[in-house]
Image (cartoon, rainbow, N blue to C red):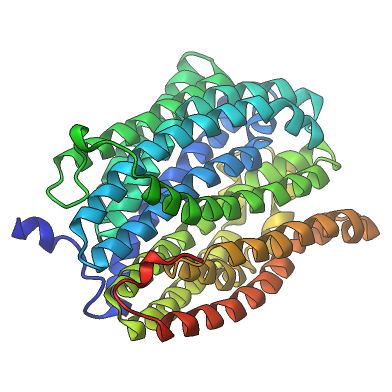
Length: 459
């Protein structure tokens, strides 16, 4: 028992600077592997798939991210609530959150899968997806989202373990699933010649593998959140709390992608080479954002546990340390990808023209990722304090409404890719400013009423 406990980082004691980094490093690797599900799909079909396969799979990137963002958001809600209960020393409450979270996540995954499949055709058509890519894109979506319930349960389990300071188990399970995904991609595309369908099947299988592995670990765990069949029932009050925190987090993720659907429509107004170049370059965004997201999870977990424990000083320190790490990660990895732009883009295509088109996006985004940390880390911090509604509204206005207005009124002024891609850093800066102002007020209110029972309130 003692040996198992020693492998978990102490969130409410010790050096935040050291422990948050150690907490986040396995998550960074875990998030990157999760990104590889879709990224390896794009890479394999781009190099060995049929004509137009890269455009087909690449055209779904934003759409897939929209719905998986909902699943990840619910996992973030589980993470926040479990962290608060562990910090307060409430074993019974931790168990109830775990069992309720499992059932809610599984049901939510089925609902998301049905929505993703049902809305695929009208949304892709609305985005202006080119005719030669449409059928392949639909096929990919229909198969890929059969794995959505598995993804939902994996993210729930990831949220539970991360809330307790254990980020290694999710990394191990996702490593196994990621390796499986890449091997199956190569087998289905090169050996079976299944192209788009092959990479989608591989991703679905891998998602279910990660789900099964993390559930087994939860069943075998000796911690209060251990899964037991006889305790599987929904606590309505806890389910409401998970949805109150998790749904806004998921909606925040989805909102970015809804706005990106309009951006994709702008990209689709260019020739197919630009569309495929954007499909290749957008993988840099996904990769860097997931690396940075590890620190956001750390921010929520550290603030959530210290909020539950009633330690106001460590709440603020956790925010600033996570902000430093996430902004530094955005800057460093962005510059690295820019410096290796040709090599990076060549992973996804053999066409020099597509590589050049992809570099148009990298030239703007690689220097801007650090700005997004000020927005996303502040949102994560507010989530740790149970504040989700107001930050979500701010994201809707700053990163959805603003971007749509940009696409319709600013982008047409010159109609260049540069002007289209500039909307990212501008919207991040505007939204970050509003989120930081709100967090200052939320923190001051929290410390005024801070008691061990404070996490029972919502905002």
